[in-house]
Length: 275
Image 1 (cartoon, rainbow, N blue to C red):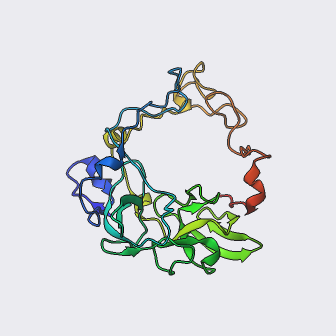
Image 2: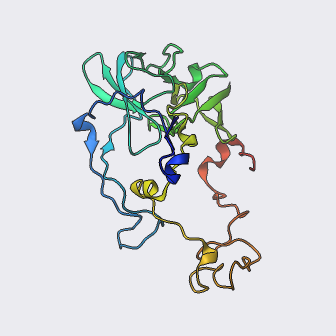
Image 3: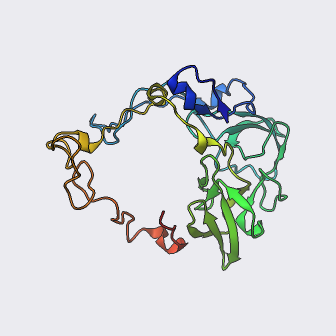
């Protein structure tokens, strides 16, 4: 982590990730895409996700989450920053000359070799079928549906641990503590996602949050009764409702929100524990 001299009150506590491991090279132009900023609004212009808007302009990097180029060795050219995700990305070049972006693993560095194969060597960054990975190894960017591309453990510092291989399924222990089974024909990358210090970042001041595209959040108890179930009262009054509620009066805090008939319920062996 990078800390700063306390030149101002906000600078005193502010921290950022140490980006010295990144190459600093310009991104590959043909792999950049402009995405329209909607500020949390739907096609009718109504806000459906609150507290979004503004922020610094950014271009989307086309990340290869499938990595379906089998048995073609690749080399890491360097690590780069991606403004659209918490993890770092790696620029790779295949032996045939094709370049692309993938999610970087924790200890990945420029010059490292990489291979995607059904039974690739057990080396960090390599991608192979889950059934060929021994118990106890960490994996990230894991497919839920074979061939669809990685969907599990893609954010900074996340991983899943291989617990067992049985009856065509691999049992994975996720970062949340949930134990879930996935088809062992799916692919996963060995290791842990990069930028493990991301959760230690202290924003420090409101302006930095605004540049990230995050707008202010107002407490319900500071509003008027017409605006929120917690609103009104004299001074710092109590909540005044038996159960905690959202802005729209829906009960939160304790009510289960997962759909009872969701297809993937049968894949969960053990739910995550309560905090």
